[in-house]
Image 1 (tube, rainbow, N blue to C red):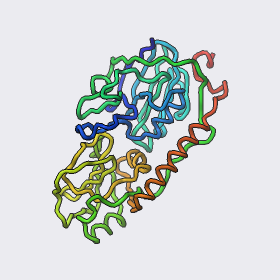
Image 2: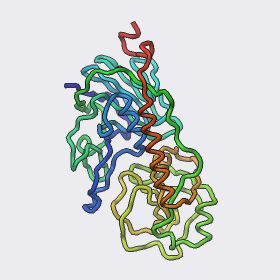
Image 3: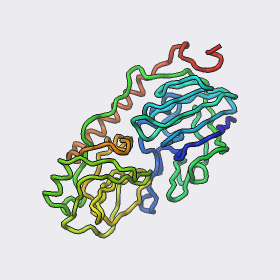
Image 4: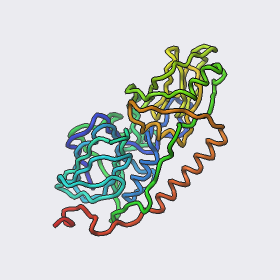
Length: 323
């Protein structure tokens, strides 16, 4: 049995997996990762399956130790990683041995990081998932952020090689693509021109539930109150302030503000990873285009996983390799 010891934890470290499915009718949103592809790639780099749980963090990751040898990988963006003070690279796997200290800093030019350990995080599933839903206190470790002195059980994992990408996975660039609606008719042409032609700034008012954008105000000629209806990840609600709110992983299952558009699923992780203060623009596409882009994005992700290869022995940063 392998125990993960958390000596220090950043302010936003949680256990996450792919999230809960089929419970929106009961008022339970899925939770899960803010950047699903990065989580999937972290799992693949340590030989885990796509449904295994990882640690997600924003801000500093923390300091970690284990009681048995494991492999780990950190994805999401550029980040400082140290094993007993020796530098290690993100987007590839490394050994962590008992007695070593793994220190992970904050993401650079990104927001959300993913730390996967071979065997996965072994917290008990709640409503079919290990994902932490902070707003409702579900899943993970007691439904909360992790902190110093917490201990987590890791699943059993067979021995395996250290892995890296043969060809690095690249995110799309350009405007964040959106599908108009479902209440796009609440907004006149002038508001739509502002929404699509002017930049917005990702504000610091953000968490796993939603992120607020600063920029042109978006008045709704049809009014800013509707009969509450269902929301999806990426719904862009516009309250009476005119400041758009993009709903994220821990969104509420229904909402009473008109939704001018919905972020295409393929671009939602990219928006989640956009640092506060950064400018973004939107581009409108059809639902069919959004579906085609998502299919293509999933194919690119599968190709990246299929292209993972064994690292040269000289790249092993374990104690034995450095002796």
